[in-house]
Amino acid sequence: MRHFFAAGLVLTGFVTAAGAQQQSGPIVMRGGNHYAVPNPTHTVPKDQTYKIAWDVKVASPKSDSINPALDVPARFLNQSAALGIPRSNVQVAIVVHGTAGEELLSNAEYRARKGVDNPNIALLEELSKAGVQIILCGQTMGSRKMPRDQILPFVKISPSAVWAHAVLQRQGFTTNPF
Image 1: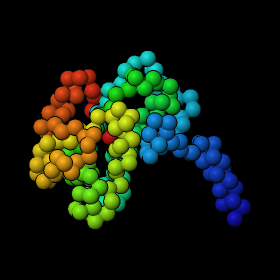
Image 2: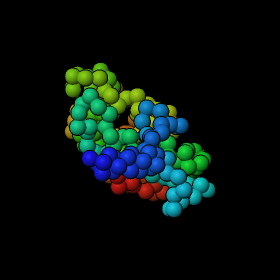
Image 3: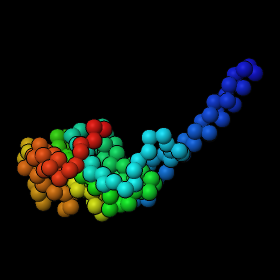
Image 4: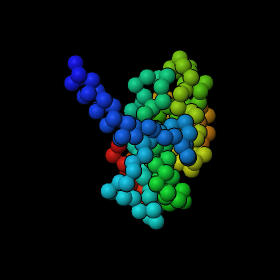
């Protein structure tokens, strides 16, 4: 019994020492929680420009929950700020297609289709206000019968996700694999 107690104390000390406390913000407050990593050995240069695009094609597993894939770019923005990278050195784009496309619908249209309020709107609005380009695939728009007047007003429409990525790559963006 004493061994289990001692092992529990050691494990508790290890978890506490690892500092498993997530931080929110400072750019996106409704998402993008991240852990501080003290003294990383793979450092991030603060004087470079970073242009990252995310491909989001799968809807949230639950209609009433934020799509976790939309949280990753928010985390990147918040980590960038926490690392001291100037906001002007970080550009982010999110290309949305497939089943995730419906998460860019107005609350009224999302509710009509899913029976619940669109949980993604607040995060998407905050990302947009932070300068993130949110681009919807026009082919998804057509195949999922998404009228333009029912799509969130800050969303850009591309002829397709392929064209969105092609243009972003020509502009120097890399596509993040996560």
